[in-house]
Length: 425
Ligand code: TRH
Image (cartoon, rainbow, N blue to C red; front, side, top):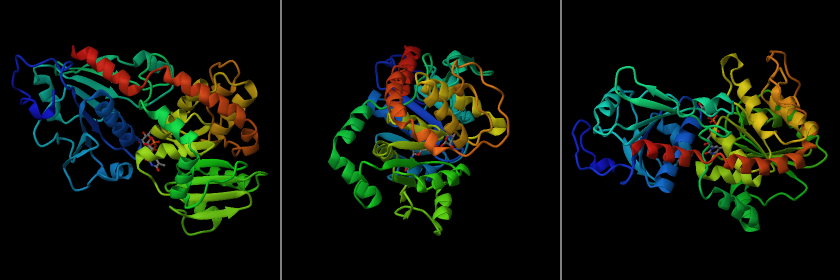
């Protein structure tokens, strides 16, 4: 049922069509903690629910500046605006819930952000109780399947919240994937013109020759990068590095002895040629992954996109207190390296762990997948490029197979829409 035609939250509607039959209204609440992953995931989900499922979506976001980096069409001073078929509300204070209180059929609180109290109490009074979902952060750990879709009654209101867990394995919510993504990637890969146009626009020059290894580097600050840059400089074959401007750019500037390494920067040393790239709008990020032979990614959304790019990648996981992220790193390695032979599997795990500054080799390095050793805090050796790069052909084959395996878990947007519809009946 469209937001605009919704009655006041407290009124009763007797002959209203079931939401499953009319256009489903959905409100997504997103509090940006840091960086771009929170809004990156919510924006992708919002567009997908609107475009692929015909839902009427409102996206409440508390940080329009972060959002605008992904979506330059957004106007910072507007409280409400429609962008690409999604109504965007600037969620300017925790209690704000839009100019007029309208409660959607499906309410998604992203990453356990707290809904405005006034919105929550109106949800409880709504004639048809909304489907309420908490969209969690992605984790590849096994427990996720057990907790996915678990209900949790509200302590005071007659409301039921379900936990929706993204994941990489069966029984989880899966990860976001647009219906046309594979076709778009295939079209890019088939077209020499598209590739040339991309290189021209991103770097101002033509694509490199076939002997070069093209690497995209999207990362947090990382002390391990210095050793890698030196190894790439000394590589026997050319390395072309593409660096979207951001938190790792300072390290590039220091390595090349220049004041900054932002968009359009270029520097070379030995075998290494590096380009600084502008941070693109979100829909254009995929082409960077498709143009590269190896992708360094981070956080959550770029980690997922790298998997759909079906190319080898290296993940810098979002660091958490007490190394809580390390079991998640290992769980992802378990899935991703499952069918690799022992030597490449260990090399990949070594490299990912070194890139994440981890002091312990754990589960993914053990051939039988036995439980890992406790993580220790001793410094890890620098990532060893030769050790990793010798297996790039095996990693390429595995990346393609893994993208197919992951697709079998189903797309998160579709899984979420299906579940919501069963609850709306
Ligand atoms: O930015 P991230 O590190 O985001 C997050 C947040 O830190 C969040 O708090 C944390 O919980 C989460 O990670 C796990 O990384 P992520 O998730 O990859 O988001 C980056 C987004 O930026 C992604 O949607 C891709 C997009 N992007 C562009 O739109 N243009 C670009 O040029 C680049 C490099 C990325």
